[in-house]
Image (tube, rainbow, N blue to C red):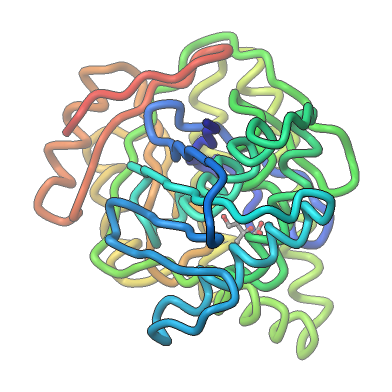
Length: 314
Ligand code: MEV
C-alpha cells in the first residue's frame, strides 16, 4: 500500500517552475491511497473515476494519458518486470489545482516500492513519480510531487532540499473550488509563451513573486497573519498580471476579502481551479465559507499546524 497527499500552494506558483521558491502545504485529509499486487497483466484502476487501463493495450482516447503515465512509472522498475495490478482510491478533487495527479503518482510509487521491497526516501519517491506527473503537466516544477511525498508545510525550490517550515500560529485556510477546472499544462505553457515574448516583464513578475515568498515565510514563522495575508493578495495580483486569473476566481477572492479574509489568491495553475483565503480564526473561516457557498462548487477549511492539517467540511 502507499499514499500521497494533495496540496495547496500558499505562494509562488508558476515562478517556482523557473527556480524561484514556493510555500506549499500538504492536505493530509485529501490524499490518494494505492494498493499493488502481482498479476497476469499490468493494470491500473482508479476506483472513484471508474477508470481502468492496461499497460501496453490501447483503450479509449480519454484514458491515454493515464495509461502512458502508468507505463512511464512501470519503466522505472526495470528489474521488476512481473506484471502488477494497482488499485487507487483518491479524495483529492481532480482538476482543481490541489495536486490530485501528483498524489496518485506518489501513492502508486509507494505501493510498488512496498511490493518490490524497495526502501526509498520521500525525496526519491517524489523524483521517481515525476515521470507520471510529466505526462499530465508537461514541465512540472516538482512542487506537487515533493509535497505529496513529504507532507507538512514546506518551502520548495527546484534543485534545493525541501525545508519544513516552523509555524508560530495555526493557519485557517478556506479553499473554494470554482466551476471551471484548472488547466495546469496549458497555463504553464501560456506563461512560457509570455516569457519568450516579453522576457523583461515576466522575469520581473517572477522576481516579485519570489520576494513575496520570502516575506511570507518570515510572516508564517513569526505568526504575523496580517503580513501573510497581504503577501497572498499581492501574489494574486502578480498572477493576475500574467492573465492567469478568471472573472470567477476574481469574484471569489473579492468576496472572501469582504467576508474578512486577511488575504486571498488563486492557487495552482489558474485559468480555473481554486482560490485560498486566509482567515484570522475558525469563526472567520466559517463566515468566508458561508459567503463563498453560492459561488463555489466545493468549499472547505483546512487548519495548517506545525506538522499536521485538519479539515472541516463546508
Ligand atoms: C501547479 O500546482 C503549480 C504550477 O506552479 C506548476 C508547477 O509548479 O509545476 C503552476
